[in-house]
Image (cartoon, rainbow, N blue to C red; front, top):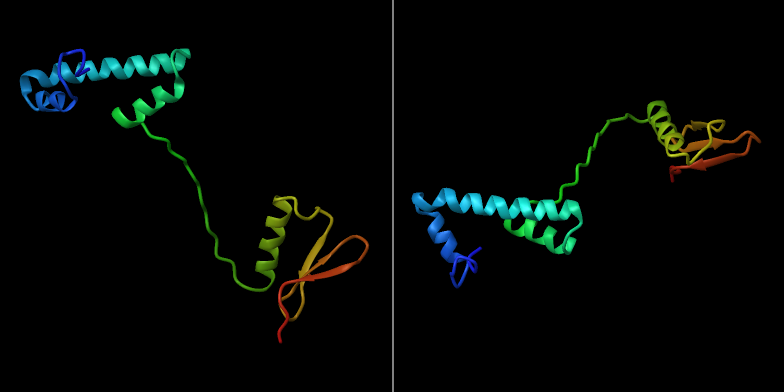
Length: 125
């Protein structure tokens, strides 16, 4: 915009924008440039990454990631085993027909349909 108005750098536009008599006009020009960038991006005109760069660096656009995180407190013993079992099944790390329990040492035992017992967890030493 500064180039097309005959200025040597963009800081001159920032200086003009500080004056109330030019502020509205400059904001409208910026909005027109932004609208053109977005329209061109949507229509596939020009080089997309370049348009994205301009929108991010000159018009306040940014990438956002929405991460939803929940926590749950689980006590030791059967409630812990139940929660671990639910998570293992939910992530399909163990099949639905596998039985999960725990022994006196709080090690988790996984028992499959062939009655093979596998301990997961810790041993009291």
